Image 1 (tube, one colour):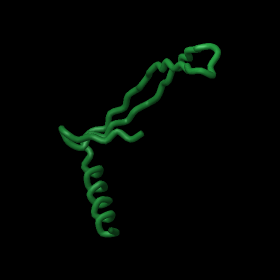
Image 2 (tube, rainbow, N blue to C red):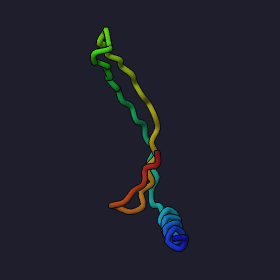
Image 3 (cartoon, one colour):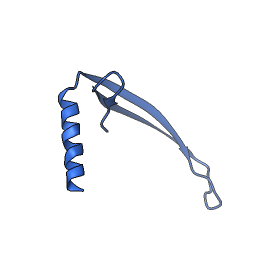
Image 4 (cartoon, rainbow, N blue to C red):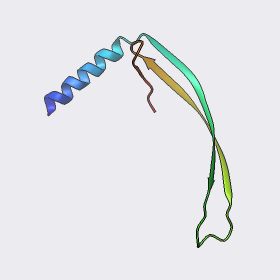
Length: 68
């Protein structure tokens, strides 16, 4: 098992060492949520917003990594 994990780690390190391009960007979104049921007196809808950043490491034309 340790050999498999070591091989995967070496492969991942090798792929990221040859990274061709790094892309940066922004993300934004809106969320609408409500709670309903027998015990809820008022059906209230809550609205929230989120904003964040994103980084994408392009390994090849068909493979890229986007960490959270």
